Image 1: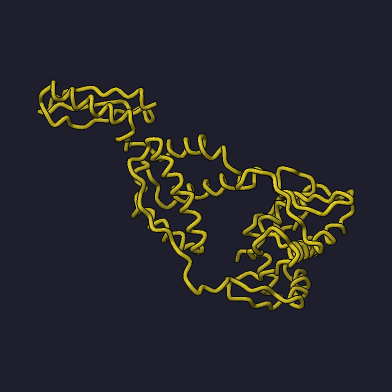
Image 2 (image 1 turned 180 degrees about the horizontal axis):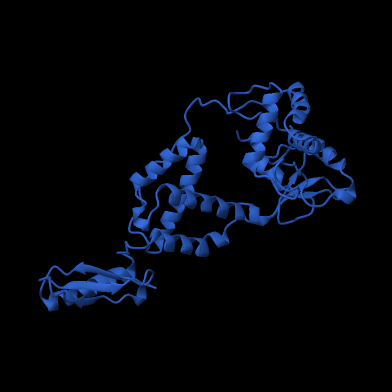
Length: 332
């Protein structure tokens, strides 16, 4: 695309010096700068040098709009990445538009990114989450610079986890978990009690993260899926589209989770494994992870399970659950 750039010399009636001009191949807008001379011969030489620099990528357009950048990044980069990565990047871009409202890409400066971090902290995001968000944003800005949409990438200091930071919650004991199961009937309507107790038991013995558990399917191979072939070791299948390595993966399932799943009759093993019901939504609607986490926290509150003010009870990881570094707990 840089080969389409042609720098010409123009004269403005109200200026003594000549100007250099080209059409940005991305924005289709005119870009001007002074030739700093009234000599057409010298200006033509300057035009040739600037054109060569533009075509070689030494100088880039600084007028790329944020909207054009986002559209190109979505079309040229995110479409080739895992769905979870796409979703994460889209969330970061939405936050940029909400808090910074940039008209042009060059408006994403180090100072503005620092302000964005402060807004994330005000919203209660952890330092690790902020760091992850920034990683996605900086990767996008580096790509923009590599294709000539941004002159320089802002220098941003990534946040570090504070030393000695206590975990948000703690693993609860078996007796506390039993109290939570009983407390379900104090939080949800009678017709929803069984679905939530089933969900809590599944979290207890699976070691799945909350968002993973809500996506776990019996038979949809495009999602995290159960594989319980007769005579075979029970497994969890992770499709390539959800895996950072872009390869299908199999993880051994904890025996206690396999026993829990076996309680479901074979003719009912279709769709989502867990279907906790909400009070004010249609029966077929899926609950979001953040809402589900708040409901689980309410169970802990009613059961008198205190792990830390404002935190959600953390269910332990089965010791036999292979392939994970540990259960991340439920969001507060």
